[in-house]
Length: 98
Image 1 (cartoon, helix red, strand yellow):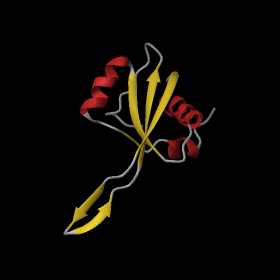
Image 2 (cartoon, one colour):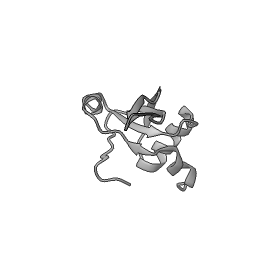
Image 3 (cartoon, rainbow, N blue to C red):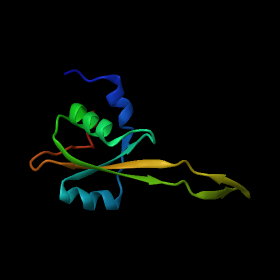
């Protein structure tokens, strides 16, 4: 099984925040994914790219905030996050990259 280009397109970047480091104690990793990505696509991509077993994928869509820049209203982009639960014993070191 080779890694296809669609696997690289299914995962944009890891999310590194205080909350994601707390969730990592429960064997979970958080990634930013495209809005069009489905749970089976995300699961397949993570398993192929990082050579781990995924037990569950939970997704959340975060609507972009309306902000002001120099008095003019603007809007941040919408983001979809994937909370990936790994099998016990598996881990992903997101600091090293692919």
